Image (tube, rainbow, N blue to C red; front, side, top):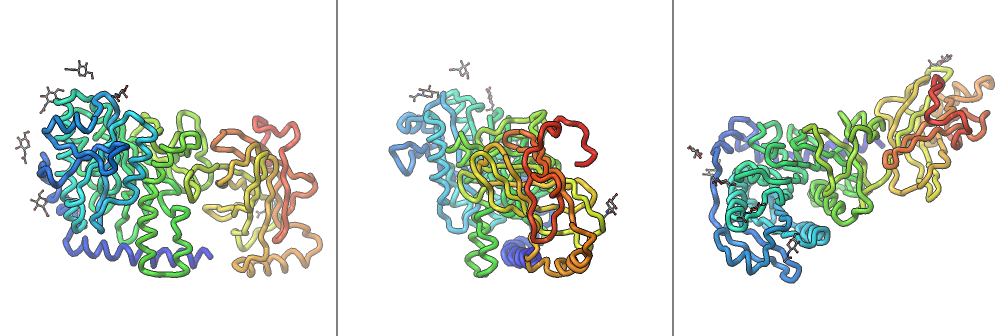
Length: 498
Ligand SMILES: *[C@@H]1O[C@H](CO)[C@@H](O)[C@H](O)[C@H]1NC(C)=O
Ligand SMILES: *[C@@H]1O[C@H](CO)[C@@H](O)[C@H](O)[C@H]1NC(C)=O
Ligand SMILES: *[C@@H]1O[C@H](CO)[C@@H](O)[C@H](O)[C@H]1NC(C)=O
Ligand SMILES: *[C@@H]1O[C@H](CO)[C@@H](O)[C@H](O)[C@H]1NC(C)=O
Ligand SMILES: *[C@@H]1O[C@H](CO)[C@@H](O)[C@H](O)[C@H]1NC(C)=O
Ligand SMILES: *[C@@H]1O[C@H](CO)[C@@H](O)[C@H](O)[C@H]1NC(C)=O
C-alpha cells in the first residue's frame, strides 16, 4: 500500500510541478539574483486606478460598492464605517482570470462573524492573470497601491491601522506583505493563506510576507509538498505563527488517494487547488464555527508531532487556528494539527504511549497494529497505529491518534494486530514458524498498559489490560484495555514498566 502510494505521489508531483518549474526555469527565475532584480524597486510603484479595484461588500449589493482612491463621496455612499474593523481580502495568481469561488464564501463568513466590519475585496485580476513570474513582479506594485489606499483612509477618515486586517491567499499573501511594508504606520494583522512558494522561498524578509509587515502575522500552510525544488505553498515559517495543518502536506478529503487510482490530467489540478485552497476553508471554518475551533500545537518538527509528543498546552504551546489565533511572543513558531476531511475541520488528538515487550527480536518491526477507542459519547473506527520509526521492542512507543468524532470521556481501548493483511503475509509466515509451532512461546508481543493524553481536553489516562493475565498479542488477535484501577493514576510516578 505505502509503496504504491508514494510512487503515485511522486508521479503526481512530477507532472504538476514540471509545468510550472519549466516555465520558471526558462526565464531563469530560479537564480536568486533574478528574483532580487525583479523585486528591486525599493519604493514600489503605484498602479493606475483601473488595475486594482477596491470594493466594499455590503449585504444588499452583491457586486460590492466600488471605492476609488481620492473620492471621498464613494466612501460615504458605500457606507464605509470609519470606526469599525476593516478586512481586505486579496486573491492570488489566476489562470482563469476570474475571481475564485471561495472569494464570496470568505466575504460572507467575515460578514457573519463581524457584523459592523467593512469587508473590502481587492481585485487585481488584470495583474494576476499573467505568466506566474509577471504576476510575481506585480505583487509589489499592488501592495503599494493598497498601502496608498490605506494612507488615504487614514488622512480622509482618520481610520486606525490597528483595525485593518488583510487576508491574502497565495500570491495575495505577499501582496499583503508589501502593503504592510509600504503603509505609513503598522497594520494590525495580516493573515497569509498558503502564501505562494515559487520565487519567495528563501528570499530575504522584505521581499515576501514577513513578521515585520504587521503587528501580527499569522500563516496557514496547506500545500508544501516539494518537487524539483519548488513547492506551491511556501514551506518556511514567515509569520509570528505558522500553522501546518496535516503537516502542510496531504490534506484529507482532497482526493489524492482516490485520484491515483484513476489518473487523469484534470484531477491533478483539482487536487492542487483543493489542498492550496484548504487554507481558505480552514479560515472560513474558524469564522463560522466558533464553538468548534481547531486547536494547533507547537512542535519543532512534523516527526515529533506524529509521535504525539507535542500535545501540550502548557506555557501557551497550543492555540486556536484561524480567526481567533493568538499572537505569541516568539516569531516563526511552527504549529501542527490534524484535521477532518470536511468542515467543521476540528477533530480530536490523542497521544498514546505503550511499552511493547518482546522476548525475541522480530525481523519485521512494522506489525500492523490498530486501536479502537470507546468513550462516553461514541467509539472510533479501527485506527492504524502509525509509528514514524519502526516499532521499538522492550521500549515505550509513542504515537498520535486522531479521531473525527468527539468520543467523550475515554473508557476502553482495543488493540488489534491485523494478521491477514496482504502486505504482512511474509511476516505472518515468519511469525507462524517462529512462534506458533513452538508451544512454549504463547505470545509475540506483550502490552500491559497504554498511557493516553488527550490534546483537546489535556486529560491524561492510564489504561490497563482488562484481564490482567491477557497482555499478549499475536497477529490476528485483539487486546482490551480499560482504565486502570486505583494506583495507576497518571500522577503515579512508578513507571518503570510503562
Ligand atoms: C525611494 O524613495 C526615497 C525617498 O522616499 C528616494 O530617495 C529614493 O530615490 C527612492 N528610490 C527609488 C528607486 O525610487
Ligand atoms: C460603526 O462601527 C462601530 C464599531 O464597530 C459601531 O459601534 C457602529 O454602530 C457602526 N456604525 C454604523 C453606522 O453602523
Ligand atoms: C516588472 O514590473 C515593472 C513595472 O512594475 C516593469 O517595469 C518591469 O519590466 C517588470 N519586470 C519584468 C522582469 O517583467
Ligand atoms: C483620530 O483618531 C484618534 C484615535 O484613533 C483620536 O485620538 C483623534 O482625536 C482622531 N483625530 C481626529 C482629527 O478626529
Ligand atoms: C504618516 O502619518 C503621520 C501621521 O500619522 C503624518 O504626520 C505623516 O506626514 C505621514 N507621512 C507620510 C509620508 O504620509
Ligand atoms: C526484552 O527483554 C527481555 C527480558 O529482559 C529479553 O529476554 C529479550 O531478549 C528482550 N527482547 C529484545 C528484542 O531485546
